[in-house]
Length: 177
Image (tube, rainbow, N blue to C red; front, top):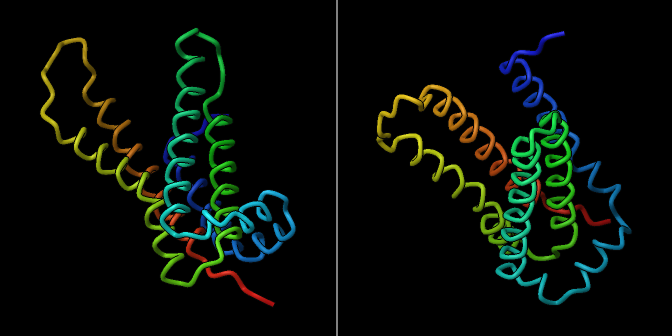
């Protein structure tokens, strides 16, 4: 069975939309989690700036770890499917964002500050990919500029969707009672 890249992206976006539709009920199931209780009790995490910096750094660490897991098998010529690594990274990111949402107990404006600061990693990554795409390359015969541009366009798409999803999931207002 053969999958097209467009089909994989389309199925991924459909799954993401379905997940976002049911985000609130799924996050309510996380109530009572030990990690969330620790975050709720941590005074520093209730400050929107510190929580945003924490979320930014966790997004950075997840991206770096995922990049390393994608790069190492290719470097050592170990046959692995990058789809499994990327699916695990998406699940880990969604859990991180849901924990941050449930652990932060600020007002709507504080929640928006925390979300914008934490999600800005992916926005900065998107800007970086756009700059890289529009940077004039030196035409070296061995370079495959078309494939590089396709990869950068997918990077732009994925990082921008991650920015919007992170912003949406962490900004959702918790329902009390």
